[in-house]
Image (cartoon, rainbow, N blue to C red; front, side, top):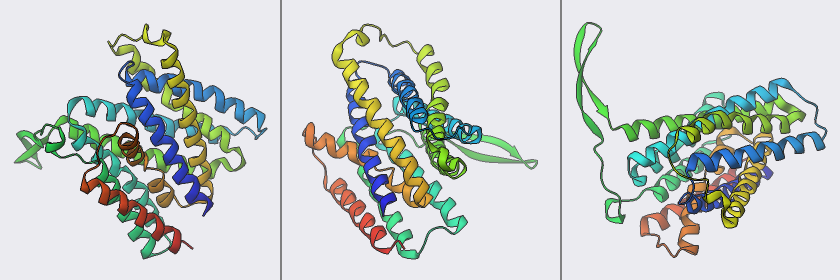
Length: 306
């Protein structure tokens, strides 16, 4: 039960951080926000690892770095997809990333029973339903396919679809997010009592790709960093994301990959609800029903998990 609580609270932390980051992204490029917050987190988590006197383990650090690379890549692909296509198409695809850890858990036989699987399925549908936005809500439609091309497969010509670039990026982001969850879970198992070193590696792994994305970007940001409220917002984002990373890592240590991953992926829902509460953005009936499905799915898991 503790792993369920930690996973859910991690989602609250991530979702709140994403909400603040979304507002801050109007002044700073998203890649820079990730770079600054993750870089600061790396310093804090290193301090935590040293103060906690956990034994250093190179394997834990390496697995954390690999997971961080996957996570950083996912964020950059996600942000790029959002610049090329509507959020109502991109976000639901990315939100389905938790299906990968669930599949891994099914393959390894760690899902305890059919009721828990049903609860996970209900939550995934709820997440996708909450993040989906229809055309009437302001998103322009995009072509699901850019046309058809002729490829020679096994010496025979074949007509194949060319999906829109934003869809390919969203799918790639979902795969990377799912891989990051799976790698982090394995890293926690490898780390044992050195879990904080794995978490530190996770922070380090996100830095290279975000640094490259920031340096290659052309968005002016130096003046924005001189404003106190921007710095305060970055501090809040950093603290919330760091809290989420730590809670999720410890949730993996005591919980099941598929369950922890799904409950730890509710950040988009939290962000949507916060937008409704703080910014008075109205939730449509589909989003309300989808949010209710998430609650139902969580209750099913909490009751039937043994």
